[in-house]
Image 1 (cartoon, rainbow, N blue to C red):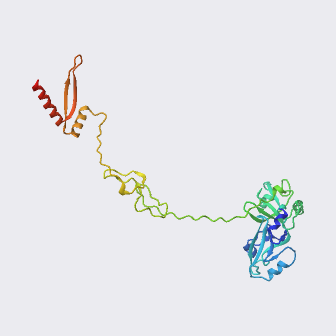
Image 2: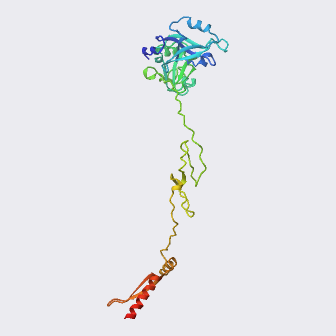
Image 3: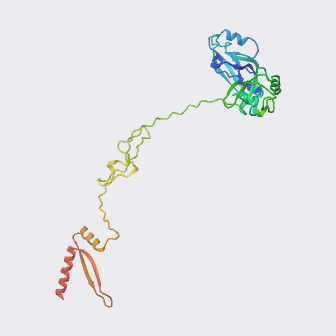
Length: 342
């Protein structure tokens, strides 16, 4: 982080009260203060840029009364306002239930130690550290430089050491008690790799922006099914009274069935009527006499006419034709008259 971030703080500057620890169910916990990442930079209209008793006096003067605090988060690198109520009856220590230290938040994210690979059955493994997801962010004593943590570990050889650890996956800070031991059976006093520097800083988590879900009109319930298909109304407006919508083609006459799956938008009154058709089906294997019988039944007034033709040099050919009865009568009369003249 650079000094340019100070412009986010009202009144400027990079100083504030660093929140080191937050007790459970305390006023600070209920207000959403977060250990290690939060800095209290103002109370009401008072900028807290000096290490004095100003914050303590304001808290004592407002016991059981809500106060507005301005808090800077080094995790999201943003400023937010919270409401907190100092209390001496909440059941813990302090009016806010938090441990604070006045310092600058410039460069605070640089002083973190990234937990890398962890050897099985090592002090780090027994303490419950998580490889690559955990970051050591502090201890009971102040850690300013990269060597401060290693010096602290050497000073606690064989003794319990409390570390403040942040997990990047769960986004939670916790206390971890670890006992450095060079004789645990592996490499190092902790049995884990530790990274420090630019590539091992805590990833910045952007603030979550609440996105309102668009409101959608509730679709009407489906109508009863017709021929296995359901009709769904796509809009709230009723259709024009002159047109009706069908889920199948309307019947053209009483002998025809409906064809499902086709929608017609034509008015019922404008549908054309088709005359009934009676198709004649002839089987491919039907005999010739069956065909003649079918034709005779379909046209009762038509009679067959057979004529024998004889041409020189050609075999006798019989031509059969079917003529109406009246035509046959006229033809017979004509032939008889011709014979009489002959």
